[in-house]
Amino acid sequence: MNRFFSLGVVIFCLVSMMVSADENKTILLSANLDKTLYLNTEYASLFKIEIQDKKPCTPKDIVTVSYHISKDGLLIKEDSFSKEIGCTSSASTGNFIPSETGNYLLCGMITNSSINTFPSLSSCTEFEVISTTDISCDVSLQLKTNQTIFYDNEQSIKFKPELNNKTFPFVTEYWIEDLFGNIIKPKVNTTNTNEKSWKTNIDEEDRVLFIKAILYPSCNDSDQSDNAAEEMFIVLNNSSLLPASDAEETTGSNAYINISSLSPENPSFGSIVNAEVEIYKNTTDKYSVSLWVEKDEKTISEKTKLHLKSKNTLYKMVIPAQIDANCDQKTASGTAKLIIEGLGIQEQKDFSLAGINEGLCQKSNPKAESEKKEPNKEKNSFQIIDLPAQISAGEATRVKIEIFNSQDAEFEAWSYLYRGSKCYSCASGEREDNKIHFSVDADEPKTAELLVKTDSGLEAGEYNLMVKYKKESQKNAKSLVSKIYLATPKEETKTVNQSFSVLSVGSSESALTAQKTTLTEIPNYPGIVVYESNSERSKKMISWVLLVAFGLLSLVLIWKR
Image 1 (cartoon, helix red, strand yellow):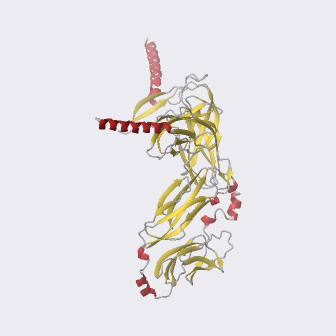
Image 2 (image 1 turned 45 degrees about the vertical axis):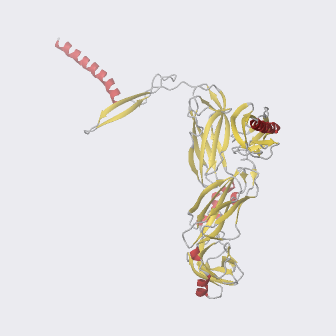
Image 3 (image 1 turned 60 degrees about the vertical axis):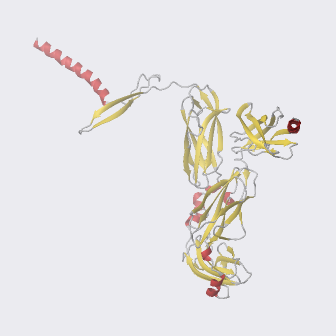
C-alpha cells in the first residue's frame, strides 16, 4: 500500500513539474516581412514564432496561427497554418503573392497550441507592395565553378550563380549542354544563389560540356548583354587515362603534346574549332596547359586552360576554342595557328581561316545596324493599346496589347476583370481561362488580343482590368492594371436555329444546317433576315404559284361562260 502511495506521489510531482514548465513557457508571434515587398513575388515566411524559456528545444510543440491580409480595408486573403516548433521558426509560416501595388495590413493570432498558455492578441504589421518593372538597374551574372576544368566520370561538378546586385527578385535559368547544343541536364529555374551540383555521367572517352545560365531580373535592366554566362568543363572516362606503366612504355620519360587533327579543317570566324590532342605528363610538377588561336601574332580566340594533375599519365581528349566573330573585319582571312602551351612545351598547327558567321554578326554589323535604324536602343515594353471606353455585363470585350522585345522570345498573357479581391470575369472559377501563347521576333512590335467575357448581372460602375504576362520560362508574371467602366447591360440579340435536309444532285444524301438570325430588338429594323434556306424560299413561292393558278382558273371559267 505504501509503495502504491509513493508511486502516486512521484507521478503527481512529475505532472506538476510538467504543468509548471508549460506555464513558464511564453510564445511570441511577430511579423517577418520587410516594409517593402515586390509585386508578383512569393513570400512564404510571413511570421516568426518563438517559444521563450524552453530548454532544451525538444520535444517540439505544435502551434496553430490564423492570419488575414487586407488592402485599403478590403480582405485579400484569410488562412491558417500549424507548425512544429522547437524554440523558434519562420519557414513555411503562411504564403502570399501580391498581385497589386499598394499598402497592405498583415495580422496574425495564435489560435491553438500544445502549450497551455499563449497570447490571444493579434500581431499586425503594415507593408507596401511596389512594382520593380520601371525601376532601372544593371544586374550581371557570373558562374563560379571548381578550380579545375577536368572531371572524372561520375564526379560531381559544383557551380554557383553570382549576381552583382540581389536587391530585386530574380530568376536564374541554368542547364548543361554539349558542344552541339544537346541538353545534358534539363533547364532548371532558381531564385537563389546557393551552390548547385551535377554528377557527371558520360559513355564516351571524354566529352566537352558547358554550364549555361540566363538571368531574368524583375527590374528594368539597362544592359542585358551580361545576363547570360557559361563555363566549359571536360569529363574524362577512365579509359582516356592510361595507367602509369602503360604510359611509360608508350611514351618514354619525356612529356609531349601532339595535335592529331582539327575539326572542322577550315573553320570560319565566329565558329568553334575542336583540337584532338594527346598530352603526356611525366613527373614534372607543372600542370597548366593553355590552348588558343593566333593570326599575325594576334590572339583571335578565347584561351582554354586545363589543369593536368596526374603524373606519368597520357591524356587523350578533344579541346575546343571559340574563334572571334571578326564582325568589324579588322582581321584578314588566311593562315591561322592553333597553339597549345604547357608542361614546358609549345605545339602549334596551321589551318586556313576564312568567312564570317553572319548569324553572329547580324546585330553588330554596322551596315545592318544602319539599315535597322538601331532598333535595339528601344526598351522592352508591354502595353495595352486598345481598350474600350466602357463595356457591358455579359459581353465579350477584346483588349489589344503590344509587345516589343529586343530578343526572340515566347510569351503568354491572360486577363480578367476584378474589383477588390473578387474576379468578375471568372465564371469557370479560373483567372487564366483566356490565356494565349505567342512568339515575339527580336526588335519587331507584336500585337495580340485578349478576350475578356464579363459575368452577367453586374452592377454599373468602375472596375479594374488586370493583364498579366510573362516571358518564356520566367517564374513570376508581370502585371498591367487599367480602369474600365461597366455600363448598363444591353438587351441580348435573339437567335433562332433551323435545320433542314437537302438531296444532292447525285444519289447520296447530306444533311446541312442553316442559321437564321432576326434582329428584332434594334430600332428601325423590324426583322432582318441575314440567311434564308432553300426550303424557306420554296414556301414563299408556293403561295405565289397558288395565287397565279387561281387567277388563271378564274379567267378560264369566265371565258367559257
